Image (cartoon, rainbow, N blue to C red; front, side):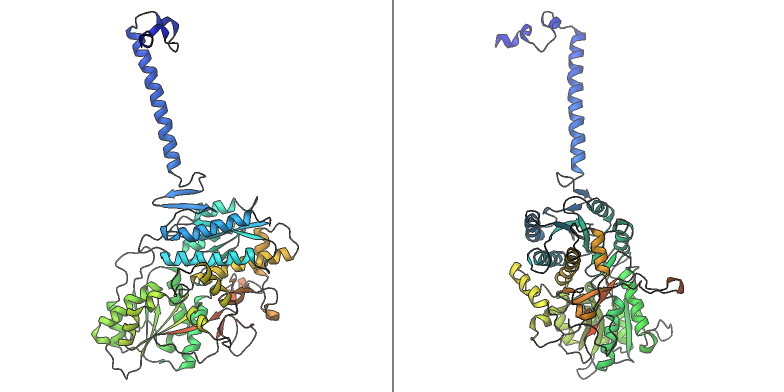
Length: 546
């Protein structure tokens, strides 16, 4: 202990200081050195902390943006607790793909992975179902007998719950088009809005990465690199028009209630309703005999209180409307029905014609078909008529002889039930699992076609070229996508179009031969008209069976 106190044994101290009494200058110099070293270490540690705090993962693939983790990764990350199982399954399949010995390509699932605010682009259920559908398609490609000797790795590409963080994601994807497991395409893109279009037009398009949206339907969402699996709003509304004509729906006592936000989807739907029905059905903005009213929807940022239907419903019932066109999103239907239920002027006798609400949707939103909504509809003599891309309940129950049931749906549903037995029986009803499955199946079909053309290393350019080559001729023998929502290919509307002549649609890339079933609620009615198929004229039979 004495030796420790003897400064003469302190080897780290300069020799001249070991054998003399420390003076003031020595003490100040020593403590200054200690302070500099301490401050330097603290600064380095704080800077390192701040630098790493900006990222959510050690590999810096996910960056913090507010309360979200934005970016692209092939590893499961806990974006939300109810996604842990499906993200883990996809991560395991990604690892199996990389160790399979097959050429591996990457496909990004571009969408939100969180839903914390009421106006989020996707609900937690829709996010989970979308990833589940993509997983079923990934498994089918990687282990199926008809998709060639390639394997698909899925990338989680989080653009934020309001879709605004697309620049980070598209830059990361553009950097991955070469090297091991190159990016050959992207799927997802859930909402028809400017952020989605910009992510393709200014992000993926310049990098020549094809984007295949699962559920976009607005005709304004067009770009040479943006393919759509869903029918367009025009086609949904056209299917409704054929239903109205074939089923004797009241054409005189009509009304339109529309979301008036500056939102791409609802604005396009408003225009489609007016163009398809318009003055012939009395839905004009005439100020004397007004047959339209507006409300503010809940999705997306907006001013004021959303989902207030009092004025619109009062006006609708004041003119005894029997056919109502609802131009809005699924989330707005329940409060609309609840307002009708609470409005005394809407009371009608049981022998009156039902109040028919015509609308469009991807599938059957479970919330709009729950017990409460069914009771409201029955109590108020309401019939909801919806043109959809997916009619899972009917397809599940369809007999073998039902020609409207897509051929590939049964196999998809069986696989889904095997992998996700814990999900409720209505998990497929919203249509998102089916549509995301079909979006990835479209990319996988293009990858397999490129390999069949003896392309050794498939690139994003090859996939883009194959997606544009589809044709329904010869019953889709080699070119159609075997989707769970029906076989389809893509229409290249730019072919033969004369842009100088004022053609509006020159970069369409919408699905050809896609079925559009009509669903009625609360009573299931069989449509008297033939099944609507996109781009097929009435009376023709050019499309193969769905």
